[in-house]
Amino acid sequence: MIINQYENKYFQLRFDEQILLLNIIDSYDICSPISNINQIIQISSNNPSKMRVKIEKNNLIIIQTYFYSSIISFIKMNEKFSSLSKNDRLQLIERNIHNLSRLNQLFIYDQIHFLNDQIEQSLILDQYGQFYLDNLLKSIEKMPSDRRIIKLFLIILTFSTCSDIVYFHSNQCK
Image (spheres, rainbow, N blue to C red):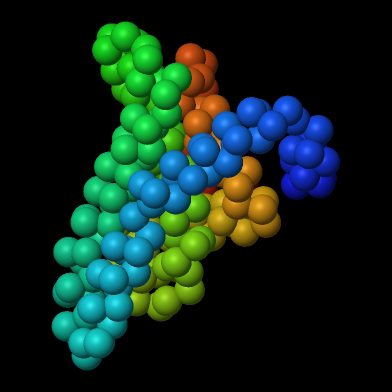
């Protein structure tokens, strides 16, 4: 329903508003680490399983760094964000970086089919546990099929002064 609303509303926007949305989407694509992450995974996938697991453990840290660095680059490209005072920019980043990176992580994992690979799943399982892995898989499954919505939501979340995304920390919460 959100996707249909997006498509219908998009064509009702003024031309300059359409351009703004396209620029946001393009900015995300420019900053996206997907090709870098795919390259890292491709290089390690040529190794035997045992060696691949060792390499992938190190790569997981690099990949997670990409979640943060790419989202910072993305929001810095936004003119409205850049025009804010340094103090306001820092406050927004401090307030929202975790949620932005988490959403970026879900988006990227989905795009590169990271969790479709057994070795990648086992690394997440070893590092964070079954509950975390299950929640990642469920969250990706529930993402809208039109991924442009996620890119637009990232910029909205950037400017949010009151954003809370609920994370469950125990198996009691379902």
